[in-house]
Length: 255
Image (tube, rainbow, N blue to C red; front, side):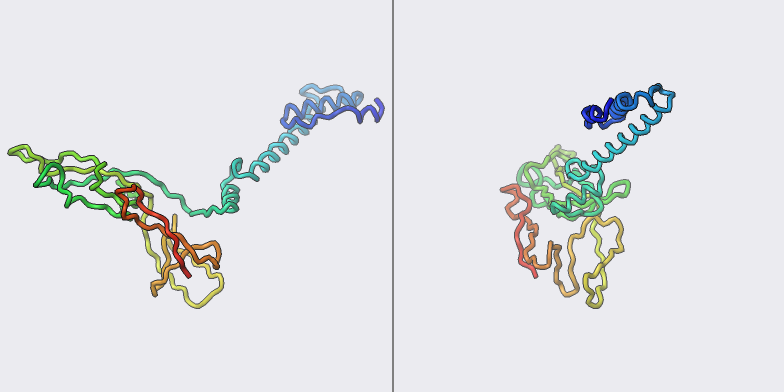
């Protein structure tokens, strides 16, 4: 076969796995080198050469696909690359992840003396930030206020009068959203002025920094850049029972 005839034979570049690459290499060897390589059985030297080259090609194809996938957020597999793509889009890594859940809360309330059901004067509001501890020692914090006067709460008779059978206490059941962890305060001495000062917290496994303030009462906020003077804060909604919105976000001007 002449050199010009060799150049006209097309080569398939779409095979990227081991078997396809080996099959293409075997066809090329049979076409271009019929006198030098004739034995392609599993125990022959030619088969070892083809297997080695096909193995290298298969590995290169795998790592090529893997690296291309890591270049896009929806196909990234490594956590470091996912976080890197997220930071480009504005995502801020919060640190150690937290666990969220729902807890059932009960309160025993005296019966009303003027009507049926529990006395509304004894129905409490459990404030957000309340701390719970499980039997295994895990800590959880309540993320929203729990109002036991909500008419959606389940109310059952807890105690009755032994003489007439009238209810004396009612049990009110409500649900609350919790997050794993607990609040902790740490005091740091800043000292003299230092450009781009870096402060390392002594506490381990910090999930979130809730607030920062100095001894003079000044409060500090995290911003994208030092020229930003508007921050958004969560404000409790006083009309929560009517519109079912526990809080609203409002802008604040800060220095």
